[in-house]
Length: 204
Image (cartoon, rainbow, N blue to C red; front, side):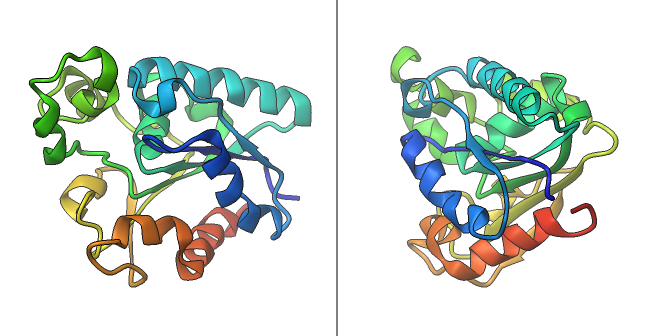
């Protein structure tokens, strides 16, 4: 039996989107759980990371598992990585996969720098020179976690310079053409298969 799988949804995507994405993995025999959301992902990444920590502890308690697998969708990848590197999540995670996550920040975030932070806190935090991104770069990946970052050349929102993060093995898929490459990461069956194989290899 595979470890339980926790999926973190992305910016502006309701929890239902993570539940729908998880159907692929449930059909492959995974026990799938999703994290609750706050402000559709627009809130503070640190707060959302704490929600992931609480959810992970609940899943481990309910399943009596020692470790779990985690997939972060888009901004969910950044939230999950922050939890791993800065929030103490490492000891309970077997495999972590970020899918299209802005792990090095996003230059698109500069478009909201003049907007009051409250409504778009998470976007502002993905500016490459934000306090959160500096904290993330300074932290190290916890030992014992297999970590991958999946992206595609057709992703204009999160190009490779954004998703290829030190400490995570980069996986570039061929399934995604501009300008819809980012969304293809979550809807194309080929990308589903790649992510599933990453979390299934080695330690089933």
